[in-house]
Amino acid sequence: MLSLNPDRKALLGYESALRQNGFEIISVDSPLDARFEIEMGRCGVFMSSYVTPLAIYRDLASLFRRYCPNGHVIFLAQRPHDRIPDADVLLSEGDEPSLLVQKLRDASGERELPLNQPHESSL
Image (tube, rainbow, N blue to C red):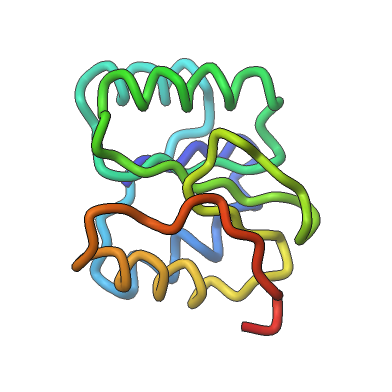
């Protein structure tokens, strides 16, 4: 999994929970580093957040889909009902990291993750 975490804080809890559950995370703090990892074939999952400017996120998500057509894009939104059309999984800042772990585990037996479905933070 590739995580673009420019402020090193927004995705920290998610990265930690994923590592504790056996996921390998490559965490980068610049869009240039993310671009490099994607172009080197770092496929599977690309995760970013509202801290990344939306235009940069969309450019990287598009690049990721080109290099990794079977990969999945996860976006951490600031508010629960924000819509990010380029994301397969949309989480919000108030969500527990365990929600992302569960979504990835559920998807491990499926071909695709649920498409950009809003959810309740209480899940």
